[in-house]
Image (cartoon, rainbow, N blue to C red):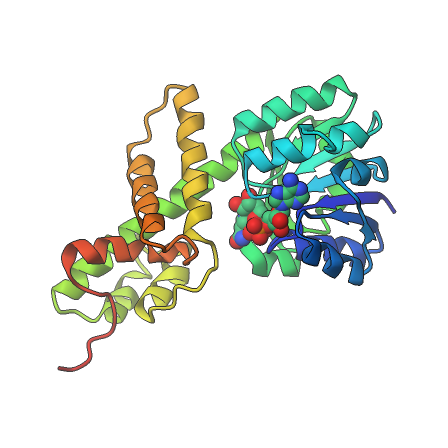
Length: 299
Ligand code: NAD
């Protein structure tokens, strides 16, 4: 059994750390929010005093933090993972961040003899709880294989997609497809509703054809029932598309659709909708059309 450090005990990190403990691993945990750390300690984790302290007590350190700046602070900053980690430690960052930041951290880690993988996930809280996440990994094959038994305790599908940064490039590709799908679904349902159709009838009519998708099946019922409880928050998806645009710019790649949807998400955050589910992208299109996607009232 490995000694595993776990940093970031939020919506995703908390159930992931618990799954490692359930499998018999000793976990030392840390989060800047004391109540979250108390809860993990109550579930059997050791109490880390800082990121450096967690690293000093671990062979593998997993980070599950909001975005690149937090990962940089936790790994490279004062009192960070690299201050405490001995040579031979492996850091696995499972946050969704810019691949450019992953590469920067990998270089700093290598200078201390510390291995690094970027391993973002897809599947959200339910799959974090069930340990059925899709995990997209970037890094060296040998480092990947050494932590694979641990990743198998967290996910149902684990794929090495290339060198460091490749995990986050894959995750950004995933986030582009999901965001543009939701926006297109929103436009389609707004048009149908404005034309006087029942959006549920339209959804049922198209879902078995080429327009059918996992996104449509998951999100259309939420929109039609006006349930925008997250799920995946608008502000996190805005962050992912911003990271996609920054990475694309560094490679001189134009992403016009991603750019448009990222601006829609930003506008929704300014309307106070940042903590709604990303299916609430539809409300941006509804406002321009003066119609709300829902079942007709029969008036
Ligand atoms: P969250 O905000 O619930 O959790 C992040 C945790 O990190 C918080 O508890 C916060 O206190 C802690 N933290 C921040 N800075 C820290 C630091 N310097 N040191 C220690 N702890 C620190 O976020 P989440 O929903 O768990 O998401 C984590 C990552 O996973 C994000 O990158 C997100 O995009 C990605 N993700 C989330 C979902 C989802 O459905 N929630 C799905 C797939 C991927």
